[in-house]
Amino acid sequence: MLRTSTLIGALALAPLARADLATLVAGRDGTLFNDPAGATANGSGPVLIVGRAGGAASAPIRRAVLRFDVAAALPPGSIVNSAQLVLANTGGNAGARTVEVHRVQQDWGEGASNTTSGQGAPAQAGDATWLNTFFPASLWTNPGGDFDAAVSAQLVVDSFATYTWPSTPLMVADVQGWLDQPAGNFGWLLKLDVETVANTTKVLGSREAAADAERPKLVIDYTPPAVLSYCTSRVSSVGCVPAIGWSGTPSASAGAGFTIQLSQAINQKAGALVYGLNGPAAQPFLGGLLCAAPPLVRTPPQGSGGNPSGVDCSGALALDFNARIASGVDPALIAGAVVHAQWFSRDPGNPAGSFLSSDALRIAIGP
Image 1: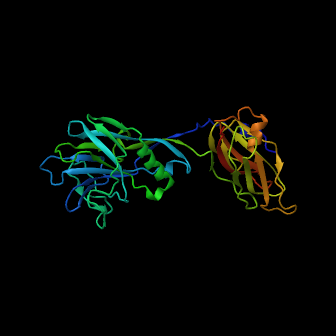
Image 2: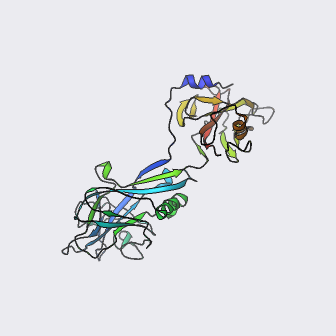
Image 3: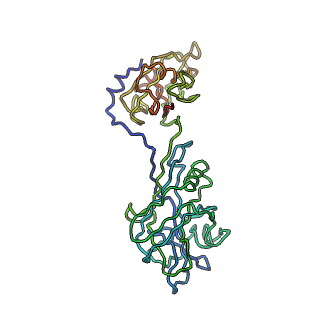
């Protein structure tokens, strides 16, 4: 039998807070210069430039492209509530200018071109340029970048400072789309609303900026899915890979219908669901991982069933967690609570401690 006191005594782990706010640094960016040959770029330099340079410049118009890997940062199935773009204006011409954000419609690259000069550098393989998505072969359909004409967001940039483009319905839609369909994430293009006036450039920090405060960031407020699997199971002494699963929806009022399951358990062994309300963990324990931060609660043990003889992976466990909520046995299980749970079951052949641990679930209890 797995005892809560055994788990708590074995670990001294600080609680981990629930996180519904993600701050992403751009994973790719660059500047497009309207060089007629498409041979000028700045893919890996420390700055991005938007606007129009002085009359002496051979390629006066500058636009910037940047991309954030949303799908790598947010759990699948999350709902994006708001999205804010944060950029540092570190140089360029004086005067207030409106910088627009547009969703890019074709993939593009970041090559090794690198300069702090406003005139750019010779384009390198894979760079996005005014003509090329990936220099020197792949082309934009429209020189200057293929982007949605709709303005996802806009903001007046004036003095040297850090600016936050406020969340808009279109920005939220862009980010939600990148989460749900990562293959269509080509990022945003930044440009001035008026590109015909000379000496209007704004210099912004790129992801290669030396100071973290100058790097482009995307701040996303999101609601994770009600149930999310995470952590890693321990392979049992007989080769079982236990897997946690669920059916139904967690609810403080339903009374039943949200079942947490375990498959691939060792047959004819006792097991129990263990859970906590202090966040996730990944703490080594009994040869596997403890995936919920203490203090922990253990549900009553039950038998895994399966084949009545021999030793194999036919065992299974199940618990209706909504019924446990409704029973009132744990007053902490209320609407809005976030529970982290995993199964432990007997594995006498485990040299690290006779128990087998599953992967885990993050459970947000609904009304």
